[in-house]
Structures are given as structure tokens and as C-alpha cells.
Length: 173
Image (cartoon, rainbow, N blue to C red; front, side, top):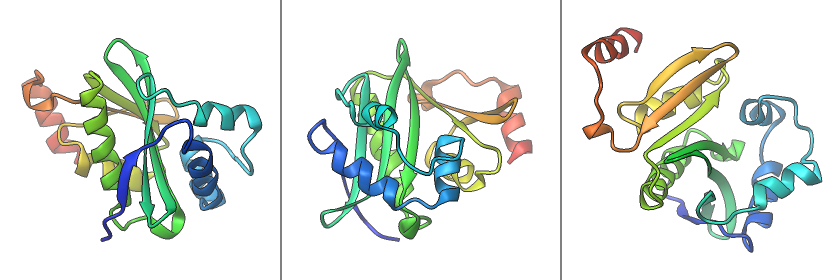
């Protein structure tokens, strides 16, 4: 396990971080992150990834020294809701970077007033599904056609889970 330096991205630091992290992803990691083959970032897609305002589109980056090794982002999708996404350079996967990024992103989302995070994960991305379960206590997962929808109420300790939902989680995991 490593302890990268994790901090918020802004418009000035996002371009270099996005380029570095994308370059460090294998073809398989890109597919799992973007849900499609992604041999390169198109200029339009890159522009969306670096257009960070710190509120409706926020992100955190993990660094080892000056080298970006992962990014987690949050995009507002509704009142108090945000979609999350994460990328960790292949060389640094399964070393605690994802945990650091998701923890920092949840803290940032809470400060920004988000009440719930969600994301779509490909069913074959078992590493991401396990990570979400470990980092987000109380996470809900629902299979929705060709993805697994992961939902995490940020105030999970005060969230109203039904008895049936708790039993379903115990049986499923």
C-alpha cells in the first residue's frame, strides 16, 4: 500500500493530469473506465474531462511526487446527486490509490453539499465493484441491463435502509 498525495484538480492542473493518467491506462483499463474502446482521447472528450469548475464538475488527483497516477471525478447529475468515475494508472492499481481517491472524492462531495454519489460499472469490472464495497459502507448495487449501477448515500449512517435491503446486501455479498 502506498500513500499518494491527493488534492483537488482545477482547470490549470487538469490537462496535464488527464493526459498523464490516460497515457498510463492499458487498452483494457480504458475499456473498463469508458465502457468502450478508447485508443485515444478525442479533443471533444478531453475538453469535457478537463473542464473542471470545482462544484458541478470536480475532481481529485493522486500523485507520487509530481507524477499523476489517478483521478476521481464528480459530475453533478441532479439536486444533491453526482456521478463519480475513477481511473488509476495500471502500474499503481491494487495498491490503495483507488481507496485514497474515492475517500477524498466522497469528502469533497460532502463539502460541496452532495447527498448521493452514483456510477455505472461494467459487470466484468470486479475490481471496481469490490473497491466500492470496501470504501463505501452501505453502497447499493443494482444490475441495469449491461452495467451495474453503484449508489452511495453520503450520509449513509442516517440513511433509511429497509430491513429487506440489509438482508439483500448480506445475501448478495
